[in-house]
Length: 326
Image 1: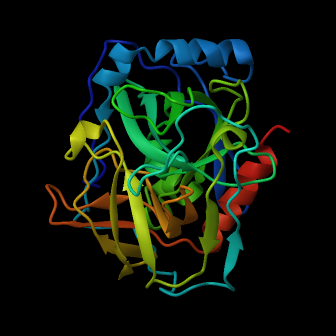
Image 2 (image 1 turned 90 degrees about the horizontal axis):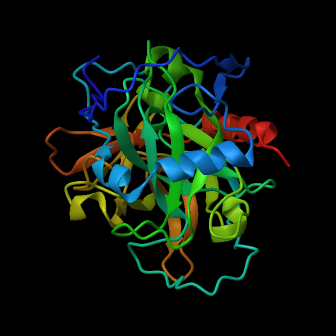
């Protein structure tokens, strides 16, 4: 499938053995987050090693993940193009830690949205976009499936780090390193763009050594809300500002075929995984995640697509939350 090709810097690091995955019967797959040499990132010491690995120099060299609409999609022909259940929602939450830092919100800059950095199996340095989501355990970050796993025949990414409200090298809330990575099995096994969804479970981190949602708050989540909704898309596109600051698009979505939605937007590489937010409030920086940037035209004609958030995203959300440590 000629999609989601990576144009990455290869550092010469050896490829590590494929990371083991666990799959449930509801179509979700997970792997413990790992360093590029295969160690599990399940304690503070290893998480700090990963954060130290991402020096300003390495972050600057990270290549924004490419995305393109394929000539032939792997959308499932067995799935009806309609909502598959009643509407549902999770409400946004504010941070529980009072911050003395500059947390002013602008239309195109939310503290819940950040830049993701990770290494590929061949040692490349890459980046995507992502955003926090509210949950009881306060650890979840939502992104695209292709920002956590290569898809069919591929592997999980390593040294996975989230930097909320990254801007021109600044990390106002510090960095958070992944504990587990999760994605829909249809993406991991078949690169199915209908289910290009991923959720990372984060270790404690940041400038307070706390949970990510405690530190910056979390967006809400909505599913089965229909194909035609008004959203604000946020991300770090390389074609606008070199991927060094957040940009936004606003407009109505429409059905793009299969279980996908489409909107007009001129953001390209690097915006992958960025949230499409219903009811985005530019005074608080919160909204309801309704999709994420998945793929678009290459070189682009001002449109991109995202997976339609139906019961699949709720299943993945519940799965990731159940895996999260307290």
